[in-house]
Image (cartoon, rainbow, N blue to C red):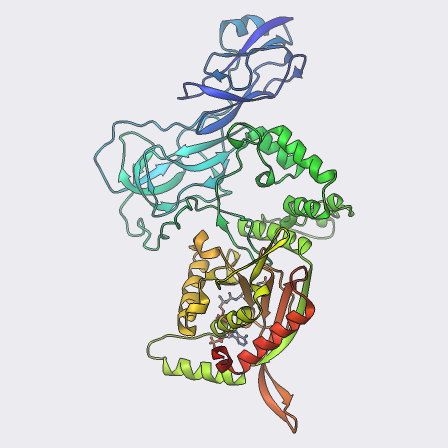
Length: 555
Ligand code: CAO
């Protein structure tokens, strides 16, 4: 048997990279192409595979070592004698795992204007997946600043900008598969000669007039990720504070086990999540974990797809059915928003003991007032909606029943002294939940106007994370569509949500006769850990009284 040195292959422009993971040990039998170590630079992490099958005799690197092209990774007793002479003559690892993405930066040219930034040569990889978008329209980016992170099964890497400038347009989104030459973004900037940036044509439309504004301070990412405080039966997307720091193999391992990496605390350098961290997390969940923990892990697993493994909760596994046996079918990927909202919905549904109270509010006079107001404002075009009145009425009810404006934090109740009200907006991509801030300080006309603006932003996919965070209470209105009652899921960490359906004229007994009244069906879901049934009934009654006579808001 021949002994050969397995060396680090050409890893592009990186001088030195750090060994962050040893994937094999002496005595291991390995196959050709099997990953041996993971290395990491500040822009990419990648696995170095073996060019030969054989048995590992000796590891020549350890964690933390800096390696570069030609560094010996290990000595291998290669299968088959033929390998030896060849391997001795040249670097054994012929195939690079990931060509780290380094943009050739030539001396900057002076031309300014729209510049198209394309995916540079990313080595042998095809169809790598965008897992994070790190900038958004309006952001100023420096030369070589990372724009997106992509991931294959062997490597994750950041793709930097080949120009400095201001982002006009982002052409990719999380989940997209990209290849060399694909358009990443259009920047107003300075194009370096010969780089992977191509001046964009100045045809109309090359400049999106509706580019989103810069993110709120501290939100560098446009790619939405689920925040701890996200949705209920409705999705909300919140700022990505960066992906969990883990190598591709750890990500893969976590995926296999269904472990949500963003819940795992990394013990490696700079908080990096190691395979042991993932194992420990699994042990904690499967071992002495509470039902809540189990539920959270199970909810995070794959709830949106309906394939969550019920076994994690001691339930029967999800039924596997070959639907095509019964008739023609079509398979479609769930949208990212649906996946995010599904995971949050599942968690909220499993973890919050929901109760829903149904009630009706007499809005006959309020609707008459609304119609009159809209008529008076016809010329200006300002339109006030029933939902705006509902927001205002809910603020009054939240003031009267402060536990509805709270969040649970361990054994403590956090009572909020601000009144940010979220509302569910139906969009082509799924439900979004923008927030009207300080609704207590705003009039119904202003709330209506802001709601219209936010609903439009939601439909155009232009809501920023800041538009969707910080809510105290959510209203989900199906009034424009129809229905009678439903049971909305609480938007954790809020403790209650109001569902509203279509108002109808009904005969109401006034003590002497039946009179026609316009009745609005209300469905209030509440967290029974924080609120009890009597308080919920009182909340609904009070809300009904306000909607019945809005002058009560002044009391
Ligand atoms: N009863 C009767 N009619 C109602 C009503 C109610 N409760 N609520 C609204 N309407 C009427 C409006 O007056 C409007 O009629 P006009 O055009 O004649 O004025 C029409 O229905 C359409 O209203 P709208 O739904 O567009 O406006 P809105 O202010 O009520 O709602 C928004 C705005 C963004 C909340 C809404 O467009 C939307 O997206 N709703 C869906 C929310 C949703 O899907 N929730 C479920 C989440 S659970 O999965």
